[in-house]
Image 1 (tube, one colour):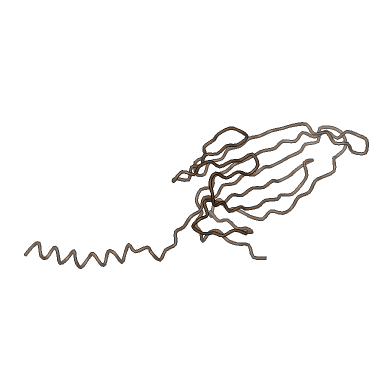
Image 2 (cartoon, rainbow, N blue to C red; image 1 turned 60 degrees about the vertical axis):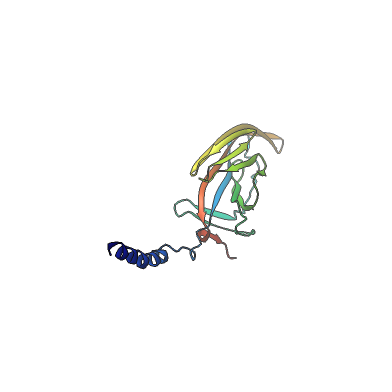
Length: 187
């Protein structure tokens, strides 16, 4: 009798538990967001101010606190999408002014763009990549920063303008973004 009551109780609770844990209606698809950004700053060392190169076409914005990505998205966000790659450059000082950026939907790994090559994505979001011929690994919320400097000489009306140009190249693994937090800019 005791076993039959337990069996009856289990038969009653089993369908109820199945309803509680049924997540078929919830789309919890996430996409890894990786960014390679370069900040270029120029400081005048001697001579006249050089002509200023201006760029201005940022096409996305990532909010680290809210984990939202807003931008021009000209690729499909579907099950074949492996990750989203953002890249851009900002110029300041005698290097110029403004920012330009863009998003790329990546459907196959390995993926190569300029001096960055993504080799592998681990299940936890860790990435393995080559940058300037060296192999690196970045976990979620980690960054790899490379700073380079050089002297740039420009002729300005017959006089040398010399600036120190410093480039900060940052590769960031921002981790996984929920599909609903990837928002298309409306123009």
